[in-house]
Every structure is written in structure tokens, then in C-alpha cells.
Image: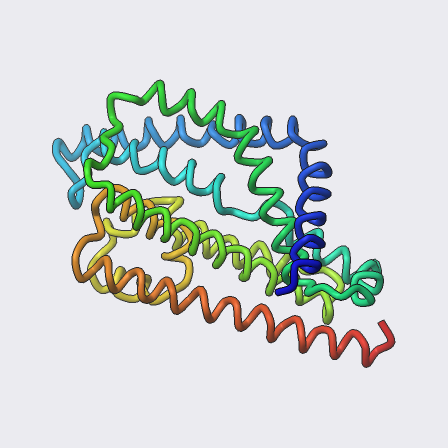
Length: 271
């Protein structure tokens, strides 16, 4: 990529940064109220462990709370915020025509905006999340091996990219249909249920886990959290990183495919 193109994407990133920062209070309030379900989760698992009188697949009450704290943090770091609606609006309202005349990749253009959005969103949502971590500090046990931090970070970055490419691909459906919300909500429901936000994947029966490990949702959130918690080690860790890399490449290829097919359809109908 030439220096000129890199400068253009940096400019897009800066513009996205400024535009996103306008909504910083919306993000702050969203993060703040998004923590409310955590209270219900705390009471739920307190009741579960009190009733069982012991652990659950290697989790006790403290490690389960720690798990949910990490899922909240990782979700805020990697999950796109309204990117699909913005892309769909570009397509639906014809704003994409102006972008097509410029010598830049639309995928790279949207990725620059995604990065700026994540940066602002992370900046304004970390304070309330930090307060929650401080409140539950007695349950937090940080890894002692620096390799765990490095591997978890790599997995976290791949999780962010997978989520972005899936979001981008979903938004491409706007080339064919007027309203994509139904499709988006269906996919997000699968992500919430199968990605580890509702419950840790590794408390499921082995046969169910074996299937879920081959789905992309497992690698959008649960994988980096499980690595950080030390619940993925040795061969299981290597396998998880290999499959996550495979899903990343597949999601990237699918995003490019959807763009080319969608653009061909858009131009064919006179868009």
C-alpha cells in the first residue's frame, strides 16, 4: 500500500474519531446501563452455587463472576458499534456512490472508521467497567505467565477482526434488501447464545462443546477470555488459535466476496 493511500486512511480514521467522540456520552451511558444485567448474573450464580454447594466444571462463584467481568471488558473492546447500520445507510441512501469514485478500498475505509469507533468507545466506557472490577477485585486472579497475556491479546485482536468482517458482510445484504435488521438480530442472537456472553461455553456437555468449537461465535468472545483464564492450554490452545485463524481468513474472504457481488448487483440495477 502506497504512502498516499495510508495517509488517506489515517485521515478517515481521524474524521471517524472526531465524529464518534461527539457521541461519547451516549457510549458512556450505554456502557453504564449495560452493566445492569451483571447484577442479575451475580444473584443468579450466587443462587446456583448455593444450591449446588460446590463447583461447576471447574468454576466456583468467584471465578464465574470473574468470567463475566472479562466478557464485559472483551465485548466492549471488540464488538462493533452500529457499523452495520452505517454501512447499510451508505448503500441504501446512495452515499456509497461518492466513495466509489475515490481511489480507496471501501473495506479499508470502513475498517478505519471501526478502529476509531473502538478507540473512542473503549476510552469512554473503561471508567464504569474499571469501577466494577474494583468492586469485585477479590475475585480477580491475574495470570502470572507473560505468555498468557501475549496469546490472549493475539486472540483478542483476531476476535475483533472476525466480528468486524461478519458485521461488514451482514451490512452487504443492503444491496439486495431494504431492511437488514431482522438478519442482523438473528445473527446477534446466535452470537450472544453461542459466543459465551450468556454462559461459559465449557460448562456445556462435551458433545455440544465439540460442535460449538467449530462455529465462529466461539472465537468472537469466549476464546480470548478462556485463554486469559487459563482454561485453554496445550493442544487445546493450539487448536483454538488455528481454528480462530481459519475463521478470520474465511470471514475476510466472505466480506470481500459479498462486496463484489453486492456492488455488481448495485451497478446492474443502476445504483
